Image (cartoon, one colour):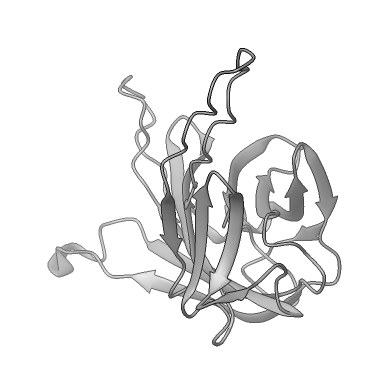
Length: 216
């Protein structure tokens, strides 16, 4: 597990979602019944695999995590096909079964209005550097219900940018808002394309504040 901090590139601050719908398995058939035909579906992964989710630190502090999983050239023309033959990944006529040696995960985190409609006397609270420094990110490869921790991933890029308000004349009176951006290099040699990459964000007390998966 890595700890995120907005004050040093060596530590990570926590950091949403392409959730592919898998076709249902064929129901049990009576003897002699013809197997039901599964409609053919094709997913195109040009540009990478996108993810997005909303998280919350409290009832009045919420955020959006959005990003994508990329690798130069690997996802170009890569398609997933689901039909009666099962699931397979193709690039042209080539069958692809595993990720490359490394993939890059790029994502940003910024404030998002909370979904709760209940009035809060405290009002909305925006993310701060201190809040982000206390969050922790864990990465896992998921196969079925099994989660395998991702080890030795590296920080390639990190930044914290101030988001200017629309009402620039009120900038000094409004609370400061920031956007956190990250790029991680993740070892993926030998990982089947059917595995999904899971991101879990926790507070210091271990409570999960966001979870999302990048799935092909």
